[in-house]
Length: 176
Image 1 (cartoon, rainbow, N blue to C red):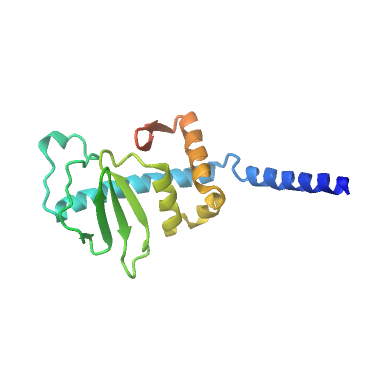
Image 2: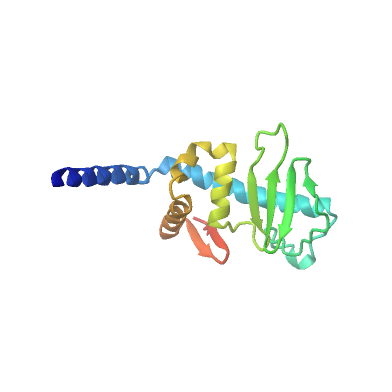
């Protein structure tokens, strides 16, 4: 009877090891996730710029050299829709953009932009993007179990490899 309990615990150990193997280095997976990261930051910057245009807000001249900074934005409209498909909710340091286009392929995609630097992404916001973007469906299962911890571990590995740096409010790609 006791031996059976030991065998069951070894079976669980094997399962745990097999799960860990899927997080071994995969250049293809890393390149795809980093590509999604870059797409997220470009979309965040574009959406902030469009929000400024739609609300007739002009970038102050001192921000001209910093096209990724939008802390000067103010949201006076509560039901702001950008391009007819993105709802915008400016709150504190972030603006949540949600694709609400009924027939748009990116419907329900969520992009939470840091208005102090659209190149900075909070790990939880990036995880939400991966879970809501149709472009990322192949990678959702990787984050199904312990998603936030798994995302933090992945981004910390990118920091160790010099691909990203940890900054206030999240992570940012390096020039590498």
